Length: 306
Image (cartoon, rainbow, N blue to C red):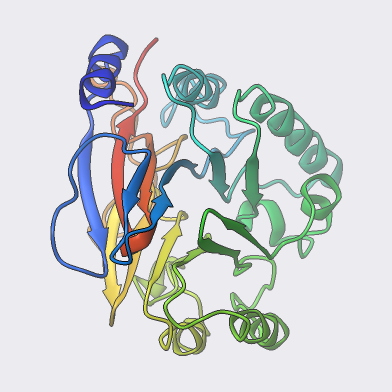
């Protein structure tokens, strides 16, 4: 999508965007879509982009928080389907559904979510669990409907790893998954571009609000020897950017309700709905990958009235 096409689409759709450029190396990436770049060795390396949606909380019911809870996810899917150039894939980074103690209702919500997500035009959609999906039954229902809690995939030179830091009630990655991660990484060169997708943050953002993973330091230790690592996560319902050494961490907004900044309120409570500014704080993002330089351009897109 050219610069003009993208801006024109955002203007017509009523979506303003803020661009945040991130990566290992300093510098701001140019706006717009580029099909390929020429690497230092003179070879063409294909670039791509994907869309991250997070914390859809399908099944949530709270009129004071989001009186249009049944429509927000559908609006986001319509917006993604309306993109002139479709993403290579879409990834949902957890809390697909809102928690419930009833196993039957849990499965019903997941089935409804899967049906709605199936309306995406893009051919490849990746899912991962959040604690609302997996913490009460160690991911049993989630695995029945969506498959493995942790897995990897490769796309155009980037190695993606989906990590599970939600199904264990101890809020850990756990020893078994850590060994699996180490074995996976041993197959890679140290300069391979790596993207880790998690639900909870892989650092102590604000443990008092459950915004941490207890053994995150062990995971970062395993990832640190690799030169080009970026983490995308959800859970905190707001945009946030952080560095652990050379590893960049980027949190995505929610599609159901925003949460206050870490420690800015006495309790971790949803920000009330503002009728004067509907959908404020809600959104999703595009991530453009410049593979050769292991850089990512993030464009935040808010959800607006259709």
